[in-house]
Each structure stands twice: as structure tokens, then as C-alpha cells.
Image 1: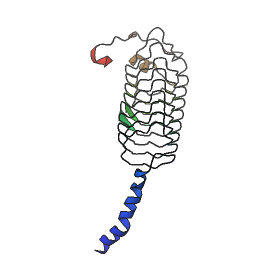
Image 2: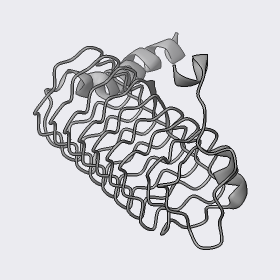
Image 3: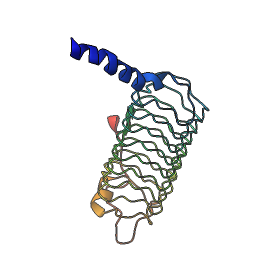
Image 4: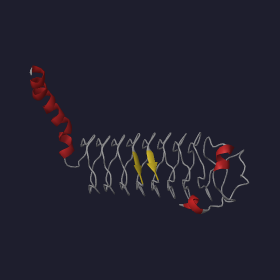
Length: 229
């Protein structure tokens, strides 16, 4: 009984304190770590420096929100919209989700290490100097994205589209490039790309290659059936 009383007296208030932040309004520095925030309309909110690590944000709208230097490590971002949001300097280590929208988002210096963002929409996003080592970005749409200095080492970029993307100094060592779309893309200044990776990818006679690499005979790729789905 004494042990139970001790838990009631000291344990429960500690639990309540840990969850209290989940009821706080969206604001700079808000602590929603581990909170359930599905289908919330948070577009345009100032949430700079917020702690959203391990939070469940499924289906929420954070378009045009200011999330500079926020933590979204381990967060569930399935069907979340960050359209035109500011995520500069934010951390998304091991964040995960399907069909996340980050079109036009500011992701400069953002940390995406080991994030699992399948079919993420990054059209026109600024990922300059972002760190996406070992990230799962299969089928990502990176059309027109700024990837200058972006670290994609050992990332899965299978079937990702890089049309019109800027890739100067982007790091590709160890990246999985199966059917990655490089048609018309300037790869001449990327770092760490090897012939075997190029052979797995798709390009055309307008693709500019790094010195020492050759255009694979399999180019241009012929897509059939599920390969375009």
C-alpha cells in the first residue's frame, strides 16, 4: 500500500506534467514531443524551435508554417503538408511517412538522416546543404529542387525524379540510384557518383556527366507498366 501511495502521490503528477504540453497552443518553442496531433490545421503558425519529436502529425496541414530549427525527429508525417513551410535547420532524423508534401519548402541545412519519406513531394524545395545520409527517398519528386551541397550518401533515391534539379556539390557516394531519373540533369559537379550507380539510373543524351564517367548503353530507359506508377 505504501508503494501504491507513493506512485499515486509522486508518479501520476509526473505523467501529467509530461503530457501537459500536448494541450498547449502552437507557438515558438512549444513542446509537443510524443503528442497526438492528427489532422490539425496549423498552416502559417510560428513554431520556431518547437519540439515535435515522436509526435503523430498524420494528415495535418503545416503549410507556410515557420518551423525553423524545430525538432521532428521520429515524427509520423504521413500525408502531412509542409507546402512552402520554413524547415531551415530543423531536424527530422528517423522521421517517417508516406506522401509527405514539402513542395516549395525551405529545407536549407535541415537534417534528414535516416528519415523514411516515401513518395515525398519536394518539387521546388530548397535543400541546400541538407543532410540526408541513409534517408529513404524512394520515388521522391525532386523536380526543380535546389540540392546544392546536399548530402545523399547511402540514401535510397530509387525511382526519384531529379528533373531540372540543381545538384552542384551534392554527395552521392553509396546512394541507391535504381531507375533514378536524371534526364537532362547536370551531374557534372556532383561528388562520389560511380559508374555502377549511373548504370542503374536513367538519363539521356542531355544528361551532363562527371569527368571519367560514361553514358550507359541502357539510356534512355524504356518504362513499361508498373515502372511509371
